[in-house]
Image (tube, rainbow, N blue to C red; front, side, top):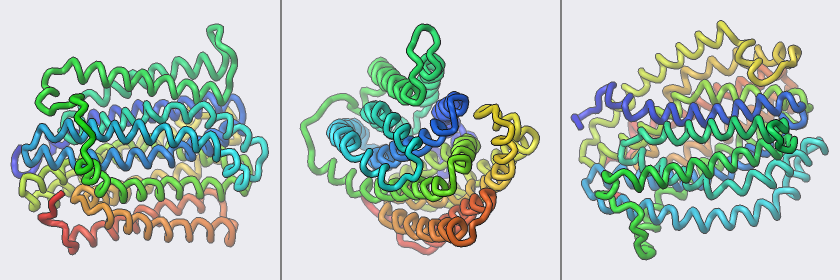
Length: 443
C-alpha cells in the first residue's frame, strides 16, 4: 500500500461496506414499510423495541470494533497469525455474552419498558417484538465478528454478499410472516422480529461457509480454536470496553430521544420512526467511510506511518461530502416518493416532509464529523472517544429535553438536535486529533 491510500483504494475498501449497510438498511425499510400498513401502534412499537435491541447489540458491536482495530493493527505490523486468534477469542466472548443477554432481556425488559412508556398498546407490542427478536443476538454478534475480521484485513468484498442474502431472506419472510401470505400465519410485529432472526442466521451460515472455502484465510489461522488466552482477551477488552460504552451511550441517547417523543403522542412517534429509518438510509455511505477510516488509521499507525492519518481522513471527508450532496439532491426531488415506501397515509407523509427536509441537511456536517471521530477510535485511544461521545450526548440530550418539554417545539424543530450532535462531535474530535497525544501508541 502506498504511503497514503489513494481515492481508488479507499473506495475499493468502502464500497462493499456501503453495499452491506445498504442491504441491512433495506431490511429496516421493509420492516417499517410492512408495519406501517399494519398500524401506527406497531410502527411505533417496532421503533421502541428495535432501539432497545440495538442498544444492547451495540455493546457487542463495540467489542467487534475493538477487535477490528486490533486486527488492522496486527495486519499493519505483519503479525498475520495473531489475526485468527483475535477472531476466535472474539467469538468465545460473543457466545457467552449472547446467553447472558437473552436471559436478562426476557426477564427484565417488560418491567423496564412498562415503567417508562405511556401508551399501553405500544408497550405490549414492543414486548411481543422483543420476545422474538432477542433470539437473533448470537447470529448478529457472529456477523459482527466476521465484519471485524474482513474490514480489519481490508478485504471487504464478502460483506456485500452476506448482507444481500440477509436482505432477500428478510424481505421474503416479512411478506410471508407479517401479512400471513403463502400459507403462513399472520404474525404482525412478531413476524417482523422472527423474519429478522432467521435472516441473520442465514447470513451467519454464509459467512462461515464462504470463509472456510477461501484458502487465502488460512494464513491468518482463523477457526483454529486456540485455548483461551487471557492476554488476547485483555488487549481486545482494553480497546473495546470504551467503544462498547460509547456505542451504548449513543444508542441509549436515540432511545431516550424516542422516549421523550413518545410522551407527545403516537403520531409524532410514528413520524419520527419513519424519519429515523430514512435518515439511516441516507447515511449509509457515511457509516461505511467511517468504518474504512477506523481500519485504515489503525493500519497506517501499525506500519509506523502516522503522518498518513490526516490525508486519509481528508480524502474520505471529500468523498463523503460529494455523495451527501447527491443524496440530498435526490431527496429534494422525490421526498413524497421516499416516504411512501413506509406508509400510504397521506397526512402522515405531509407531516413527515418538513422533518425530512430538516434532517437531510445534517448529512454534510455528518460526513466530516463521523470521520474525525472514527479517526480518534482508530488511534486506539478509545477512552478519549468515549469521553467525546459522552460530552456530546449530554449536550444533545439537554437540547432535546429543553426543546420538547420546555419550549414544546414542533417536530421539525426538535430534529434540529441532529445538528447540535454532529457539530459538537466533529469539533471535539478534530481538536483531539489536532492536539492530542495519540502518535506512536502501542496496542
